[in-house]
Amino acid sequence: MVREPAVLDDLDRRIVNALQGGFPLVDEPYREVAESLGISESELLGRLDRLLSARVLTRFGPMFQIERIGGKFVLAAMAVPEADFEKVADIVNALPEVAHNYRREHAFNMWFVLATERPDGIAAAVAAIEAATGLRVYPFPKEREYFVEMKLHA
Amino acid sequence: MHDATDRALIVATQGGLPRVPRPYDDIAGGLGIPAAEVKARLERMLALGVIRRIGAVPNHYALGYTANGMSVWDVDDEHCDALGVEIGKLDFVTHCYRRPRHLPDWPYNLFAMVHGRSREECAAHLETIRTVLGERCRASDVLYSTAILKKTGLRIAE
Image 1: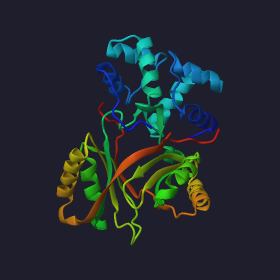
Image 2 (image 1 turned 120 degrees about the vertical axis):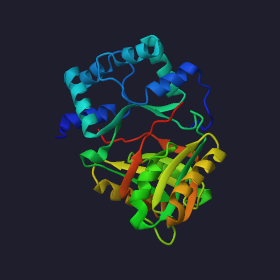
Image 3 (image 1 turned 180 degrees about the vertical axis):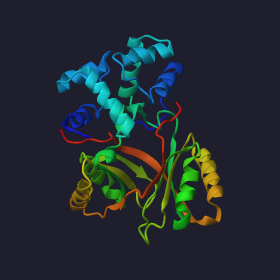
Image 4 (image 1 turned 90 degrees about the horizontal axis):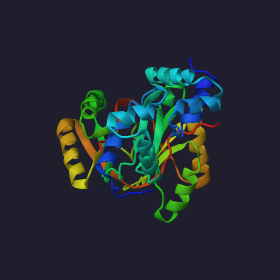
């Protein structure tokens, strides 16, 4: 995935900022957002498609907090030998329960979030990853959430 | 509370909203319910916090935030909640949690994600956090991300 700053013009930035929250629940929501930006609906849709296909945006839609309906999110880490890193990443990423996964600079070099519809799905996913990789998974379930705000100014 | 139609609506939208002029009509057609019901159910899930927000999820790097560090701190358990709330108020922190230690490998219990346009900018942010924590912090580290290996978000089974 792109790890370089993308070339964005002023309108792209205004679109990214405008679309980070509060998308309207009306019949023609794109038209409403486009009007607030002073552009046409088709231009907004075209730009949004481009931002998604260029991976400037990774998704556009509802962000679900599945824990409110009995699900579970758990951060977990592994210390993966460098030589096996790609192979292990492929195994971990193949699980649908893995919502995201980052490589980080540390002995614990792989950090991923498991998201499951039921709490017992976490232990099952951890066991599946440990069995498939032969590596220990360290779960870091949140004990308190102090702040979450995923918006970033473009 | 949460019924089979809500679940079907989650499955239908977890990958994203359709990019067509009338997206809720599109979803409604797939589920066989009226568009008004799609909007009402999404509204209700927002109100209940089942949906945090409806919008775009940016790739930090593409927006110029090339330094993304998970800062981790070993703070006194009895002070962790008060400190976590303080750290969460800093405008460069996007997530802040208390998590378990894994001794002896991992002594840290307070996690704060910081983002900057360079590591120097992040380092300044970390100094700000260090100042807030003061002597109540025994040790810390920062783990910068060097690759996004996956970023799909939640995917429950159809």
